[in-house]
Structures are given as C-alpha cells and as structure tokens.
Length: 474
Ligand code: GLU
Image (cartoon, rainbow, N blue to C red; front, side, top):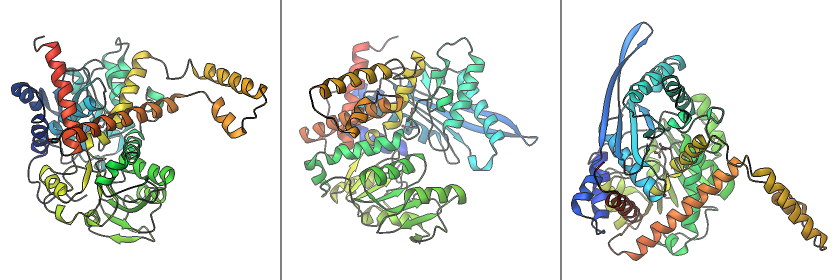
C-alpha cells in the first residue's frame, strides 16, 4: 500500500485535533481533558535475537494511553514503519473505542519494527517470544494490567506464542490465559474472534442503514443490498468485511485495493476467489478478468456508494481528498482519514463512520474472550442443552394444540445457543447500541457536526466521569 505523500500532521496530532473539537462540546474541566488526551506512559524496548548465527537488534513500544479502567487493552502491530507516534496514537484510539462501546478497559497499543515477510516461522517465534518477555518483565503484558491482541502483521499464531511465553514465566497465575486475546480457539481463544472486526464493521453499516435519516446524510437509501463498495486491504479486517457484505447482504464489491495494485469490476468481484489468489500469489496482480490498476490507490477516487479503507492510517489525505467521490466512508482501519482531509470531506457532504466506532468489533470480542478465560468455561456450555430441551417442549406444546410448526422454523427453534451464536449476538447488540448513542449525540448537539466528534465526546465524557468519581490519587 503506498504511503501518503503528504502526511500533513502526525497520526497522534490528527487524533488529538479531533479530541480537542470533541472536548469543546463538553463541560469537562480543561486540565482533566488535557490529562486524558496526553496518555499515561510508553515503554520503548530494544532487544537482540540471534538469527542464522548473527545478532539482530529489534526496537518496539507498548504505549498505555489510559488506565481509568484496567486492564488496558489493544493490539500489537508488526510492521516495518511502526513508530512511537503511531503506537501512541493507536493507544489513544483504543481508549476512546473501548469507552464508546462500553468495554471496561483502558487503552494501549504495541508495535515492533519488523517486516514479518522477511523471516521464517522459527525466527518469528523467537522474536515474538523475546518481545513478549521484555513486555512481561515490566507488566506491559498481564491479565489484570495490560492485555495485547492481534493487529496489523500479527494474528492467532503470535498470540499463542505470547500466551505460552507468559505461562512459562507465570505458571502460578491461574488466569494466565487471559494475558492476551485473539488466541487460537484450541489455546483458549473464542469462536468468532478472527472475523470479529469485519463482522463488527458490517453490523455497524447495517445499523446505519436502519436509520433512513442518517443514510440520507450520505445521499443513500435502502439497505446494503446492491450497494457499490470499494475496499482497500484484503487482510483480516478487509477480507471478512467484504466477504460478509457480499455473501450475507448482497452488496457489490466493485473494487479491491491491495499493496501491489487494484482490481475493478463494475459488475462485482468474487471476494473469496480474489482472496485465494492473493494467498497463493502474494498479491492481486495477475488475477484474470477484472481491470487491473497498477497504482492501486487511484481506485480510492472512483465513484462508489461506500469506500471502506481497511488497511492503514492516513490513506485519505490532502493529496487525494479533493478527488474522493464515495458517498460514505466506512473506517474499518484505524485513522485512514487525516484530520485536514476530513474537514474537506465534510464540506463535500461525504459522511464518515469513524474508526473508534466502526472497527471496535475486534476489541468487543476480545472482551468476551478475556471473560471466557477468567471464568474458565466456554460460553453456552452449561445452557445449550437446557435451552434445546425447553424449546422442544415449547414446540410440543404448540403442536399439541393443533398448530403445525414448519420444519424450518422448528429446527431453528430447537437449536440452543453455542459460543459462536452468543459471540455474534453480543457483538451485534454492542454495535447497534453504540451507533444509536453516537447518532443521538450527533443529532442533538449542533457543535458535534460529525459522527467522529459525537463518538469522541461520548467517550471523553465517560472517561472524565470515571476519573472524577475515582479521584486521581492511588
Ligand atoms: N487491534 C485491534 C484494534 O485496533 C483489536 C484490539 C483488541 O482486541 O484488544 O482494535
């Protein structure tokens, strides 16, 4: 993915400018607002790992933005361009995200400067374990204090290594599995976590279209069916978002942008086929059928109903904002639209559903995983058969009165809820409720003239209240 030519302000500054606008709509003491904005601490670590007989040194960070709730929560990113500024900005977004969707965590984020494609699995394991150990030593990984998760360049594999490293160092901690989320299901993970951010994006979009007056803001109406969508990034978040939109909502994915170019077909692309091709070939170049655009980012500028940046920050910026023609921008990535670009988009009447709301599905399901690990039992384990027998009795009672229930309905009714059903239901409920809070604030407060400012204001208000109630001394 090409980096923006003009990153007009640093990522952290972009987040803070939005914070300032949101704070101005609130009655929160200025100095408390300043404290919340700044973030609490950041740990920088440099460590050596021997690879092919040579010592290589790595640098990484774990930033803690807010500890008004513990543990602080947020992913660990493995990427060549990670910086302290980026990690601090992402940690701040985690604080606001968790507050908005009512997940009782503070905000944190980690990053390691590395290109994971350059190392084999064995080297990656050693590097990840060493980084994890450095963080464990300083309590930057612990079930009670700081709980990482996957982010760009990391996934279930890395989380399993982190959990194993923590367990090796703290075997007596009975809650050790809760030290990290996004683990494989066989290692204490939860069903539905991998798809969670993407599914959350879809739940958020569905809720947006359930409010015709909101859809009208973007000159849209109806449902997601048939909507023309361009998506940037077919990684974990982009893939699941696009696949669910195509298969469950009947949306048309007309464009897919990847780091080696973009594919465009006004009739719609087959997300699964493109993803399979990308997995085998390492990119989308050479995929037969749709139009191939070498400079993929140009496709961001194509007219469409919904543009979904699902890759990285700063991709819609002062360089390209004037040419953006989407009606709605759905921020599946963190920080894809810069502050200055957003001011221009607003004038153009383009609506943005902001990251801190729309991509919160990942941390919501991480919260469920953390609870599962602390309770040491899978959701639904004690209730599923009970529900099934109760529902069976209900069917029998209705049918004994001469009403025949169709086989399809009876089968649906018969089914007790398993872990995946409960996770999806909890995620859907959370995303709907948070959207409703955000839109209400937006429609009620003239100064909150975007969903982002409304979402941030709700978050800041909650965090400020939490500090004020607790007092600021230990
Ligand atoms: N990295 C994800 C995010 O940016 C998930 C964080 C988590 O699950 O803690 O929201």
